[in-house]
Length: 222
Image 1 (cartoon, rainbow, N blue to C red):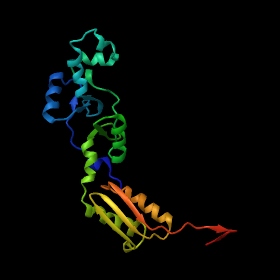
Image 2: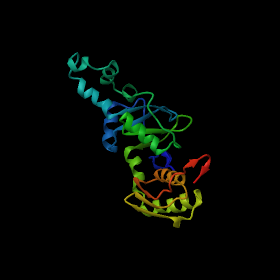
Image 3: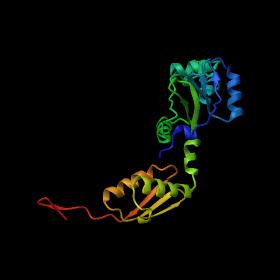
Image 4: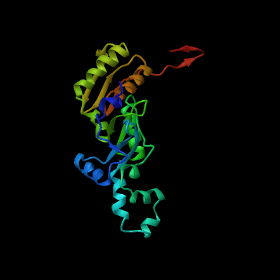
């Protein structure tokens, strides 16, 4: 079973209100050792995200009014340099995930968007958690014996209805080695595909002995 965001997210979340001051934001980032905070309204609905990069704009640009660097920046960056509250500095329309989204989906968003964490919101846009890169990678801390038990008991026996003794399954540091002879090539490929989805699996070494592909002549299979 694929791991859901709700299984690894941090909750409750340290969030800030729109009127939080620049000084308070800087102090909170340092205190909690994080790179960003969700910004919520009075009803705890997410309205944006403010990051350390947003705060750095003030330090980086305040001494360069009208200079070369300032001329290369977008108008929004210049506005942030003058910001004094979370509402001034935050990025609205933040990228978010839902509790039932897969960790794989969250990881893809973080990778492609180059962000370190994603707010988690429910159907009403209420902030319910936050998931970070560290949380995503935590799935690989799962013990090898638990991974093997899920593969043999849940997948091979219960899902594929095959005697686990047909296959030799070993797991070392999250790497699964699978040996044996599946009844058909399709069964073997489907089993390998499902094992890749097991929480904590780093990689799979497919050492199955596949049966030869069927050949046909005039409708006869042999």
